[in-house]
Image (cartoon, rainbow, N blue to C red; front, side):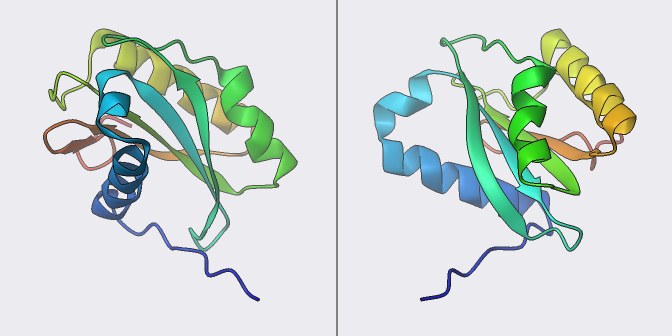
Amino acid sequence: MSEKKQNCTSPQDVANIINAILDFEGEFSRTQEHFYVIGLNKKNVVQFIELVSLGTVGETIVHPREVFKMLIIKSCSNFIAVHNHPSGDMFPSGEDIEVTKRLKECGELIGIPIIDHIIIGENFFSFKENNNL
């Protein structure tokens, strides 16, 4: 049996995938921040989705070491970072901006670039679409 892998061609695709995961986990899961990494191949086909950090109602701790571990093991070409804001506010905090900057720097150094960081709230915010990447 073959497993069909999904393309991530837009922030809306990513938001749909992560919202489906959060919905599957149940309403309670939306009361905590979840930070996911989506590993992609050269054609932006999803290779894996990993929950890197599960936080509190207002924050989660993210370290590049945990983000890049599976990306390296799975030989991914690039990745998308995604997290939710339980408050529903989709705009990035100062900490979100700093994490994105660190992930971008690390990705450039090891050759696995971040192609977007998406925040899920009432809607979604794409760092790439807002020229913040």
